[in-house]
Image (cartoon, rainbow, N blue to C red; front, side, top):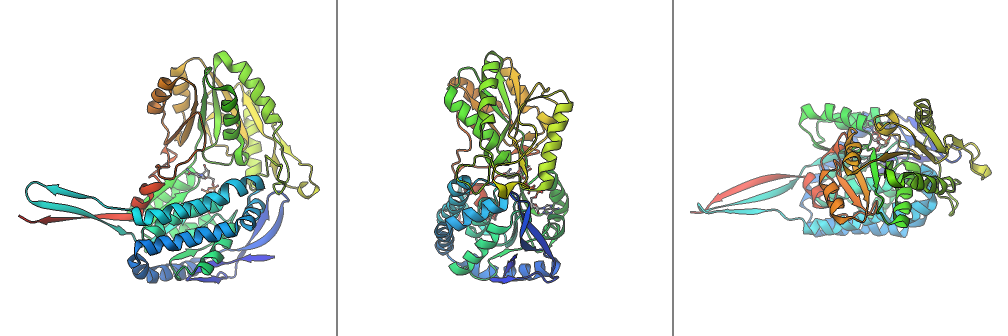
Length: 482
Ligand code: NAD
């Protein structure tokens, strides 16, 4: 069985304790690898290596840091097929998606921040009294990047690329549930000649090594993506130490459908928003708010389309719905559906575990794409993040009610509005409590724009120059010349 090692000080190393965790393939429910279950000894080595690498890396010209990131992007591109296969096995995600989305976008993150390294600039302010202020943007030192299981290589690169571009050294902790692409990436870092200690990837459990990383006094900032409860716990630990924090957390995002929307593109978009990666994307639209005048027509066609989504072996090119990432998560999703049923919800399609045709997958963790209606906007199913292939339909009478329902959760990550009334779209964009608002589209991302949520969906913004700013500290210098 393959052993997934830590990447510390440029070397691949087994954990000091020799403790290992099984890595499971969700589609077959079998273990296919063993993961380092790291401890504080491994962390100390990584922190020391990062600290030792920092002076040289932070002094390396930005163009050279950019060139290194570009080399890493090119390594990913050259290895895209094995990486896509590894990610599909690791996550249960259809290979068509890992090939077209996850792996190319991971390379794009590195290309983007390779350019950003040389474009990052600071400000200067002239004072009439005869002084100039300029702002130095200094790298923070050793920073941590903690990422979740749903887009493993994409979110790892999304965090480490701006941190490295800005001149920091990184301790990265990928999810213990889907560690394989980070492991392959650490080998690419070796091949690319990334200086030892600049990036260290430590594997293991969140409450164990993850918590130790957050507590470590030499780690100055934490960029975290994951669940809201974990984010709150990290904030409690880090706040008294005044560590810089960026928290990208959960969502319960509305797709808001008006009667005047372009029917075909709206229908395609809302289905995709609901069920991509089996609903396991933080930006998925899990509440679909539909104008009452078209409710029945929408419901019938939406249910018909969802019922024909092809569930199958993630390694089959035709598969549209793969496996759920873990057994506990599969069971959590099924529990949420059961609670919705008991609360009086109508299960319009799906509602249970599924067995795809492929023999290989007969024991795998699959859930039928599910559509529910008949639940109040404040029911648990419409309030709590399920993070699975479960969409709830809610009719609304007018724009005011749509807005009240859309904003009526503790989350504020994303929303999509489907309408051909331009003024209405702008009005809603201004009033929706969400960090990302799409109009007549979903998941279209320009990496220059800030990414992140409001309320329990997090604090801080990633993406573009926001991310570069997060990974630096501003120091103002005021020079009196008259
Ligand atoms: P999670 O919070 O369980 O774990 C995320 C990461 O944190 C993992 O690497 C885990 O090992 C680590 N971790 C867990 N406990 C920790 C602790 N006490 N200290 C330090 N690290 C710890 O999340 P998950 O289940 O892996 O991911 C799913 C969640 O992520 C969903 O809620 C989803 O909405 C969210 N998410 C948000 C975004 C976003 O950009 N807002 C993107 C993707 C996923």
